[in-house]
Image (cartoon, rainbow over all chains, first blue to last red; front, side, top):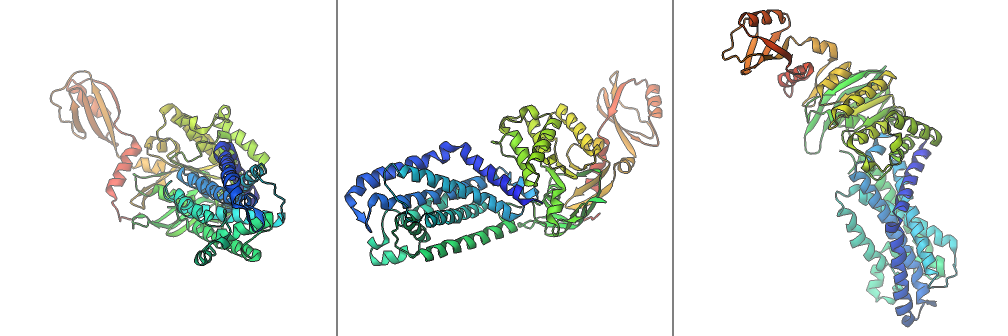
Length: 254
Length: 309
């Protein structure tokens, strides 16, 4: 049995799905982030000055890019897999000799691809507002890829456990967005009072954004190795959990 | 070789409902097999377990000698499923639905394209290949599901009420299609509520009720057990009082229609002689119910829950 064909089929289907509806998947982040850059970066940022030696616009660009990667990697997998479950076309995969790791890998790859593509679109938009010279492309690309993987896996688990369309919007609205905003997209944690700094350090997104920012402009509030360790750890835990619930058939088998 | 073997297959749902109470079933390769039963009898649960859509509580499933637990990939490669309800992506084109399914089974792209074309042509859907599937009629959607189930050339095709809700013309054409698929060597397991469909198509039959197999035999043997035929007689003139005729049970439906039960060994000649003697002229007659339907009802009513095999 050639699993690479099954894997390729799922990934191609997933990519084709979000490309086909590009006005819903690729256009909104371009418009939203252009507004972020215009309002926070140009209009307000001009009055803030510099953070760690970088202009405010340059400082927020990496965070805004990674925030887009996070939300789109997550939403791609959660909406696609939940729809598949809801319309019962998940049965096409369950009947076929496709192992669980191929199903997981296929959907997560689709999420990673969309997350990174949206990140690229936002990065191109940022060029209209900021003049960024990339400090370390390898670190920036690696952390973007790993972050997209983490949130694609999280989206997958959310989709498997969701029992209604309401359930797929709870985590993005009440967990993901607050954690992203509190993860240092628009500020340095050093600007927070002592106790809030400590609390912020419990937010994994803070490490991802700072590692990505380091890759872009060479500025970070956290240790880069530790940021990679945390991100990798989340991938292992979430992948293990995803495979476990797939194996048990939770939410997808009677 | 058996296409399918079920051994002591059991399923108890989380709410405590025991859908399958330990069924054993064997379907020979090349057979056209009917799995019948009333709603909630356990048919869909059994099919769900065979197709890996439902987790079994116990027992084993073997498909062409491959155990579904220990030799999962090979066992699943042998199966094609046409489910009861439409379950493909309604926003996908007909061609992509079938092509993707071939991909899930690991079919190389070139071969997948050839088989997709073949299956869609066989189902008379090639002209609709680029149409988004939600725009298809109900009958076409059913045929898409058959094409999808056949694209990887399965050795065992499971049809779960494939003709439910389709008009008689499409049903007949689907019967023809199913016969042809079976003739080409594919084993078919059919569940249906149309008993004339099972009678017309299938060689062997199992009847499931309350999670147990209550009958498992060949169609001819089952039908031969019918010892009473039921007819409806249409009369030329109204009859006010029905004469008593020995050997027949006659029920007057209205002035010009009679229900008659005729023991097989008795035959109809004597009935007509007696009716003629009473000056009752019969214009026409027809079978009151499908033969299999009669047996089905007898079996379901005579073997309540707990009466195992």
